[in-house]
Image 1 (cartoon, one colour):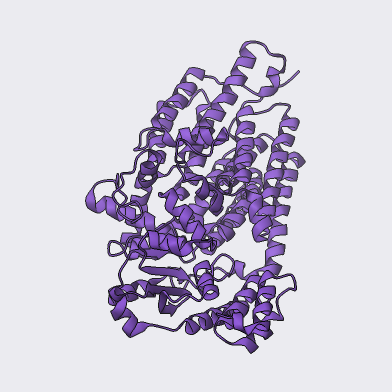
Image 2 (cartoon, one colour):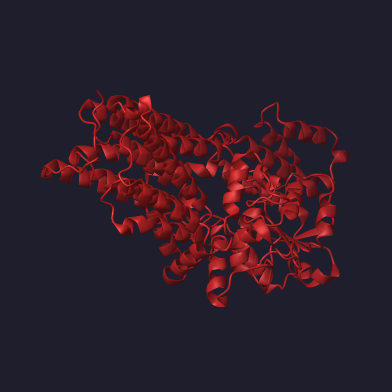
Length: 623
């Protein structure tokens, strides 16, 4: 006979000393990781969100239907998903700008560090109130410790955008759904979802995850209810059905409907459904951009792409956390002889989402912590201690690995500057001082910062919003040095180019500069080279003044590339791409002897090594 267990709070008074010890350890852990997340602002999209928040507050309107920030769509009216992409996060942008305006970049960094921890603090606090108190708190701490480590160590940059609010909203929605299961939930709990979902949907498009969570949870509850009602044989293994199903499903339906109360209505939900159905595009445009955007942007890649293509190890630890979490949920269900179907559906969904889609990782980590914490409820002794020990072992393995390989990650300290030095602040100041003319071709990673710092004097070619799919495709062609890159620049009337000397992703020479070197370009004149920023203007009478005062030789440009690569090689002396960049810069700047020496460090299979050796053997071919 199956004994049906009710969820209940532990009525026994907790032992003070064990509870105090767990509280102090937990507080120390969260404070430590909060300081680890207190780093300079570094997301290129942060600045667009701040500018849009400022625009909304100052004009009291949402941007559009014409894009005010980019010039490639000038004169065109945005509609459908493109317009929604411009307006979808308006409330989250207003919140971020209000914090920045009142507290500066340090205040925004502090908010970011708080949002990193908030979902896990919510799960830990909720789990600690469940049965077991001190024992439950210690096991709950073990459950959240590994994902807190991963998030604060590697993903802080993802929390500088309105999407950071989505990760907390996901946990709040789950906590509300859990509370609605109980028959004594007040009317205020039933109004929570209809109030939360429109707030979330105006903060960030991640509300589609909330829609999925509600739908999956309600599906699990419906299956359980019908199984009990119709006497299905396995009904006893599905746990207790809802006590007040009409109220629960009514609140869930109201929450789903209320999610559409924002400028885009249900467009993002439609796009998500089309994506799940294998359709990357809806009509001619996808909400997140074109197929080119989806194939190029890192955040749209599967998790294993990060490991296989970039050689980073943390995706393996994330996958381990996924597998341990699913194993704990399955084992706990076995011990209890019942399956909480809503929890299982939610857990499987976020594991799929966080594996197939890199952005999904930051939903999967806290949501899985919630699912595991609930699954352990009601277990005691070794049945609860063993899963917690497995989670703790994962944390220990990460600490041991990164403590050996990258010990600098464990040194929390307030930064000397609150804004990353990778942005072209000096180049923007130079353009204004010398009245450099547009249109401007810019590096995508600087697009958001240029919107913040250079608009309205300069409008961008491309930025992280990728509203213009055609311009993004042309940007990729230039980025890859495709044939016709000059003609592409000419077709947009580009007068000024602002790009990094070396890619911040892999250390490669930026393709435009590389193609100029190989083809012996005499059209573009460098006028500013500093802090990995290269500013070039077209050799045209309109630029006579800035060229007359500030023109730099191409040899100076390529020497800078070689020297900057050498500087970066100090921290990564065997980095093959940096070695290639240094050797190429030396060759282009006429330093043949040094180029030969640099080539010795390149692997024999390097295509750059073969090319440069051939050029050095045939000096007449050198441009």
